[in-house]
Image (cartoon, helix red, strand yellow):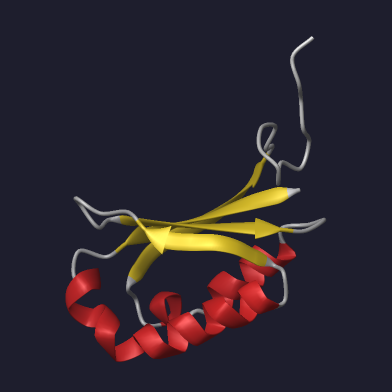
Length: 100
């Protein structure tokens, strides 16, 4: 199953992220190396949201990541939420559905 972790970013996110970026990226790359985090990044124009896609049987990895993320703990993220994402198309879809 895939889980989508959505961050609502603080208005000063871009101005403040430099201080915490290395620690955040280490956490993200470690989660990616373990197979929990598939892909992640911030939206732009405006930079008000970030999306992180996790894989697993439960949302625990995504929740654990958010709880440990320095962007969250230092207030660069106003709020976050994890939702199951039923992926149906693509080579990495968790529940592939084909026509016919």
